[in-house]
Length: 328
Image (cartoon, rainbow, N blue to C red; front, side, top):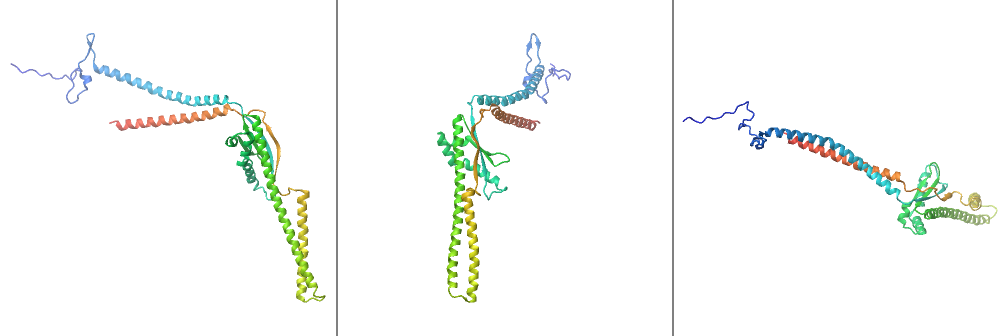
């Protein structure tokens, strides 16, 4: 009885089982199914499925940037439209303005005028002034502080005060209150400084007159000695007479200065504030402003779109890096 023959795999036979050195997956080596009497090879099915999947992934990869771009456009358009619509539905806001001319004092120079004007801006809307204006209209001081603004008209010493509110009357009353208080404070400050200067001048005049009285007493004492005074007394007498002449001239000058302040120009050398225009209500409402709101919404949308694109690029870069590391 002869030994059974062993079958050898034909290298040209494609259906031959793979060798043990290169085992193939079970899903490729399983029994071939039949369809209508014809066998269907797993290798053909796997190849077609893989090609279909690759084509599908390619289509998805081509569509992904388009979807991202469309989403980025929506991120810009939606905030823009929403901001414009919401702003357009707000009630109108009115503004009242007034202009005040500020004149500096004797110590004001071209180098210090800008700093003085900035100081006047702060003085015009300080906490005390805001509280007073808020009580005049019955509003909260914080809301009043946000609704008023000051600026210096370019190339001039004119201060422009502006108040905004949904009521024309409230805006006008706010400006009137702030302007009246500011001009009163400037006038009172100038008056106080002028009074201080006048008191200083009066004190100088009184001191000079007191010294003249002392000189007169001493001169009478020296002349009472006799017609022929000793040389030391004669020298003292000449010095006293010279000092008395100087003091008399000083008193005359101080009196003229005081008279000039009282009669010719009471505010000479003092800072003043004069209302040039207003308070007046602007002809057209200053709000709402849908275009400005739309610009703000567009800016927010651009920031969101930029964040989305940046996040997508970082995520794709991280995925590519992982694929490169995992590749044998």
